[in-house]
Amino acid sequence: IQCTLPPRCTRSPQSFASYAAFERHYAASHTLVCTSCAARSFPSQHFLDLHLSELHDPFVAARRDRGDKVYRCFVQGCDKVCADTRKRRLHLIDKHGFPREFMFGIVAHGLRRNQASLLYPARK
Image 1 (cartoon, rainbow, N blue to C red):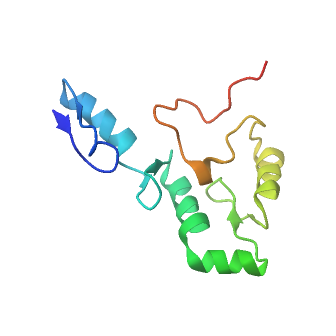
Image 2: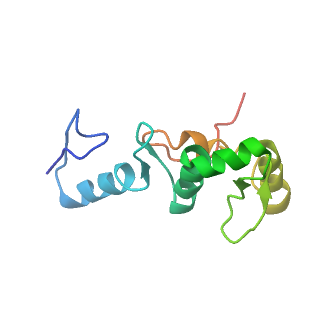
């Protein structure tokens, strides 16, 4: 089975020996992807929604420029909205117990190809 789907496989198609292998590839590379900016992918629909809102929504940009709080919490069901990403990071650590090594820039940068963890590697 060969994948030629956009955005990643159009230029360099990938081949798979089984349908199961293709399914894993499809789920990792072609779902939860922002088509507006270089095919960034996200670990959940919630993170993709945050990305689309914070980086691509002109109404949110106007509200942010006006000084409104626009940075929503990563935890679904939490209604906290912060004025900047630093305050959101502190909220996530203090209120939800996120580790300091968490990739808080996930909303802006997405996942790297074949990334297995949302934590930065331990520093030496």
